[in-house]
Image 1: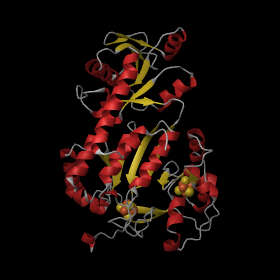
Image 2 (image 1 turned 135 degrees about the horizontal axis):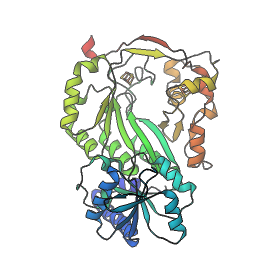
Image 3 (image 1 turned 60 degrees about the vertical axis):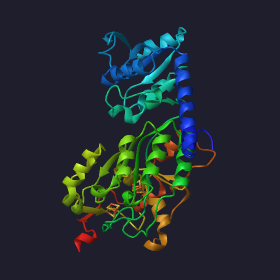
Image 4 (image 1 turned 90 degrees about the horizontal axis):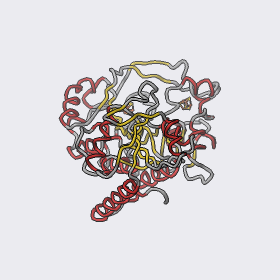
Length: 403
Ligand code: SF4
Ligand code: SF4
């Protein structure tokens, strides 16, 4: 395994972990401290917060300029520091100016692409996702909020992963087949290996959802959260759940989520509605950010088992065409091909799954750019979908309280 030091660090013993932390901190600090000048990208609230945290944690780093793409800010000052355009920054580097760029903007994919396209010879750092939600003055060291970005790689927009395959609600027509799945959990060691492989291909991932099935059924959920955060400090990591287990959830899981800036995405099914206030109170008192959908009391069936749909058209209208699904060394545009392969006998599925449907993550010909390209196109499996005219039906679940 190469190129995933943070992920490898996770498998060390506690003592080794502490040593590794010290080393990474020393290394990161040394690389920034060697270059005294820093440009903060983003002349806004986060940029100002970053300047103050840098002043506090890394006294000998000098914030020389802000950079901002908003032309109405350019030429003015923030906290006494001049705001430049990116063209001006490029000219400075061409004239021999030396320094690092630290991006303070939460949606930074486009900025990293902009820097890559301009072929700038600069070290680029990002601020960790959890830093955005911390109050000023909470950072004790650079390790708390900075990570280095390999600008020669692209970013993956999204992946989701089944921490549990089965579910405690068993909704009729569950599109992830968790209503028929036997009890089964994600494999933590395989997952850690696969996210390290993703880190070889991409500098980061914008959003990650740990889901199922019902992820809160998995007692290793904290370990999945920590492993994911260690490898992807940049990511918006969410635990997607029906929420039913949140009121009585183990405090340790909530603590790990809070400390790692990981939130819940709660889908509100009819039984969830019954517990809505208790769920909200638990999240608030545990300092775990959360979103909750409106009541979802209708489901839809968008299959076309005849397989004669216009795949490209279905893909264009499909709400899942960017829900890339990671499992056991493979990734697919959406969950469907991997799930149909897995549950072929349970579903008595006759659907034909082709090479083009599922991508081998360890294919040596892959790089991040070619993988992003494949994930942004229809797959042969799309011909089995009917995303344009789904059939809606009333939600039906199988939760013990409901019987
Ligand atoms: S709660 Fe979600 S994962 Fe569970 S059966 Fe229902 S739709 Fe599927
Ligand atoms: S197979 Fe294609 S159309 Fe069907 S859910 Fe996946 S991306 Fe959407």
